Image (cartoon, rainbow, N blue to C red; front, top):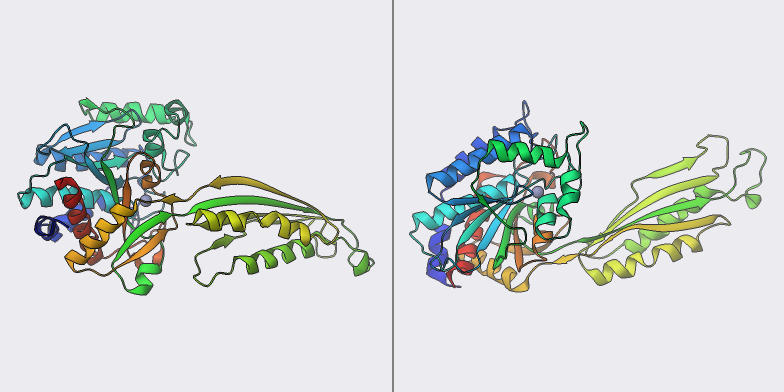
Length: 418
Ligand SMILES: [Zn+2]
């Protein structure tokens, strides 16, 4: 690490400013008495963006916006032709969410620019804050829309035509945003970054239970979805001997039991969920004729995810009890491995700042997942209370926000210096 400069950036993080700004941002779209409803491209989102831009204007930073509404705030570097180090997240929320998911990463990124400024650090590369559009995907689907379009993984025209439940399209909502927030500079999609950093609340319980303030995210886990349909035969519960039955429910629960055993791992890393279970005809005195259930399987390691997911069909077929079984895979999204070099810089930054850290895989998806396809990317997690998010109870402490921001500042400074 370029110790002294990175440390100075970290030490210049101003707790009062960070927490004041958090309170200001949290007041926009606040739900009474607690919580946040600031869905993408609503009045509240526009007002929140206006607030973030006002902080940029105080420092005279340049701002730019791209065709999907992702905003960029730029602190110049010595070499303005160099690719920037970019850090950010999102400020949209779930309809009944909290003021930390996403917002923390944008606040931390803005504070990094301030800290560099206050410490009088001139970086070689420009440093930019990114505010990604519609990460949550609650008003418009899909999730992580802005970063997906940015990274070329979702066609712009497709994103623009997505509509909310009132029939308003992303295109219409964006036109309003562009009118309300005149940002003179356009930005091309896929503009190259030297590196991308995102700070975020963990949204899981691991850091809190370990009592460790900093998570160095090594991967964002992948996901496989299956729908299993089991067709047996209905019959009278009182007259049909068990030996003559083809009971779809007995077969299905046996499958779930066997799969559940398969998914047991000593590290408790595998995520296995049967979230939907439909029984027909669902009558107390009729043998269940058919069952449909879903499987949501997640793991950060592509090989483990493949090995486990590939056994689902075989286990279901082996426990059919005479029923007809069909297993359809409806989604297969590979894990995202974050950049090992950047993770190492984050670890060194945390050590430098005097904060304990641990490696962690992200259970939730993030804008970094898509940005990582375009440049080396890293993520910094801080604990959140009870591991909960997407609820009004979501909470992260000021102490942890400051800790995460200091690590982000040191990491950004280190990467932007040379
Ligand atoms: Zn988020």
